[in-house]
Structures are given as C-alpha cells and as structure tokens.
Image (cartoon, rainbow, N blue to C red; front, side, top):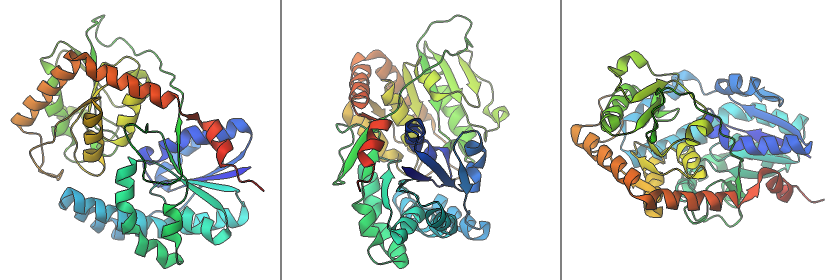
Length: 383
C-alpha cells in the first residue's frame, strides 16, 4: 500500500503522524510525506521520502497573524482556522499535493486535522483519506463549520466529506469522547531515556515546566517563564524548564537554585521521571503527560488550550489555572495573583495522590488502544 502523509507547519501538527508513518514503514508500505518548508529540517532527519510544498506569502500571512494575536480567544481561533489553515495554507500546499496524488498515486491519504489541501487533492483523484487529530475532538468539531465555505470553493461537498472521514486520535475516550461517527484511537510506544543529573543527586519530585513550541516562541514567553519559575521556586521539588530554541534564556533573569533550564529535552525522557507537568495546556504536552501517567497544572493561553485544561481538570488528572491578565498579546504577563494560584495548584497536585492515580488510569486506557500498525491495517482500502 502507498500512504501519503500531509502536515502544515509546526512539530505539534506533525508529531501525531509520526507513529503512523513509522507503522507504515515497519509494514513495508510506500510512504511519502508532504509538508511546508518550515518542516524540511525535521523531515530530512527521518528516513522516509518527502516533498516540500508551499508556504503562504509573508505579506498575506503576516497581517492575518497580527489580527489573530489581537483578538479575544474565540475570535482568534475562528480567524486562524478559516483564514490561516483553511484559506492560506490550503492554497499554498495544493500544487504539491495535487502533483503527489497525480504522479505517486497513493492508496490512502492521512493528514493532520488542520491540513486541508491533501483532502482537496484526494477528493479530486478519488483517493480515500482520514484525518489525524491534533486537538481534542470537541474542539476540532467546533471549528468544522468555519471551513465549509472555504473548502467547498474547491468542489461542492468537500467539507462534508471531510467531516465524515475517519478520525484518528491518541486521546482516550473517557477524557475526549468523539462526535465523529468513525473514530479510531491509537497509541505510540513510550521509550523514555534517563535524564542527566542536573541537580547533584537531589531526589525531590521533578516538576517539568514548558510552554511547548508555539507559545514558547512568542514575545511574552520570557515573562511567562519567569512567572512559572517563581511559582515553583520555593517548593521542595526539582524543576526542569524547557524553553524551546526561540527563547533568549538570558532574559529569564536569575534561575532558582532548584531549577535547571534547557532549550530542548526529549519529552519521553522528562516525563519518564516527572511527578508533575506545569504547562500551557497544549495538545502535545497534555497528551504526552497523560500517556506517561503524569498529572498536570494547565495555564491555558489561547487556541485549544482552554478546552484541554478543562478536560484535564474534569477528568481529575490535574487542575486548570486560567490567567487573569487576558489574551496573550505582547503586553501580557502572569500577575502576582496568577503566580500564587499556580504555586497553590502545584502544591495540591503533588500532595493529593488522586491526581496521579487518575492520570495513571488514563495512561492505561491509552495503552489499551490500537497500535499504529493495527490501525493502518484497519484503514487499508479493500479492493
């Protein structure tokens, strides 16, 4: 079988595809990945063939992104979904995906849930397609209606056929019930490595602080990291802050004695040792923590993060601390009250064993889902 994988920019969008790409490779299937230029370095480090598609022009994308950062959260999600993913990225990626479908002739197209050019190309060439979840199902469903006028401009009914295509997700059913009629759940194996001993033999519980790859590169990142460090600096814990490569570490100020800062550490290595994750509630971080059975304190900023934080809190696998300072624009920092609330939430989750117990239950539920190889077998077109 030949399987074409398609992603927009951002490792958080590409990573859910990885276990399925690896499963196809292990099965001996033909694999081709199509993605924008910003993912080329990541793709070049892997073994699978790839093609690089287009990127929206800066003079079109820049003004839209500026508006996204200025709007209230719900309005920014609508604009990002409709204009950035729906209109600009679809137009930019469509030529490369049309060419791949026409020349390479895949049997199946698997796309991350915010990449739509592959859906248009697959529909035009009569190829089966399925969407791979990036966010929680209820968040994804809430944005589907925004795409209808954009996608149907490429052909009547494309938006409807996208909404009824198979929906593949790594999140467990008890946390994230799916409104999609055909839902498949899968998991990826956890292979944690050993963290270096950056704390000189201290064995206090490990708290991982992260804002992920998108929020960590925003202008507000340094202020957010300083506030998060302040929140946990006085606790009897070890702290590992991962900032991403877009943050100037010198802007963080003095680092507390119990904390260590790295640009990047493999997520599985950190979570294999962590007792708590304090984060923005991004889907990749939430998924990783729950897969490892680690509870969370989520401080949601924008996009799908408020939904993820609420699901974690409702499941009893952590708590949510909603900032009091408003949307994440350039003037936004966490205030003293937010810092105090994050500290109290971290103390509570570390002290109360029910949070970790519930996270472990979700981890076990996730491990009981299909492997990537089993899922690919179930999706294989039948002649």
